[in-house]
Image 1: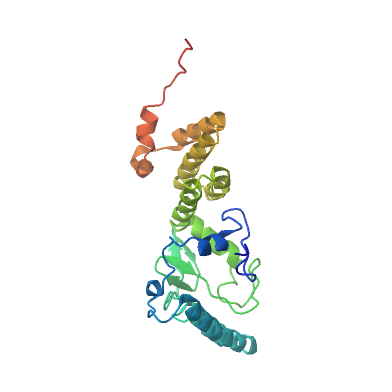
Image 2: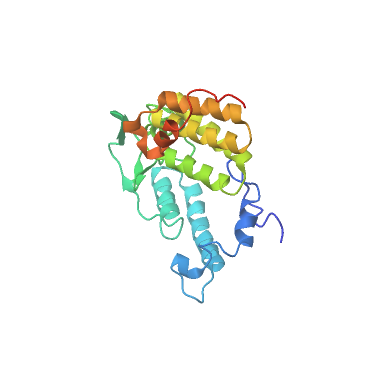
Length: 250
């Protein structure tokens, strides 16, 4: 089979392997490949359902290109997130935004506990845009990133990616998750993120055989660790058993 089964899709960045799509297709043991997993009848294949959804979304996209105002954007995103698109269902509108750490972030919608920010066509994500709701007070990209940094949504995502990559023996690749988590922890000052970040860093470097760097990260964990606040990450038992002095060689 070709190693590029979907020419229109490509994996960018270092968190996911470049041959991700080919591996998903080749691995018949993965869940989520059967029609029943998507609520389809036995006579309808996943590929057929995906093709139909793509055709429907193409029509919505063409309509959006004709009407790039707030109405066109709203209709497009409703179709994209709805049952004919990504399947998340209706999103909860947030007229007042979301509040995190006593600060209000003017994101437009929410799906379960995750903020989703809708903006009109062509809105600059990196700069403020006067008169555009959701972009007038702050650059949308930085606002959403700060919201993620202040909530619990991002930490389990990065931790899960680290687990997924590490358990496949791709320890060197797992350092990308480590670096991103530590950067977010340092920029936001979130101690939970820093504790978990240094913990997984120590484990990654340990399995890479870089014991000196691993110990440096453990030292950072011990310096930040509060047993009452961070007991969930299981560091306390390890900390109690770490020798305070090196043993003499015999």
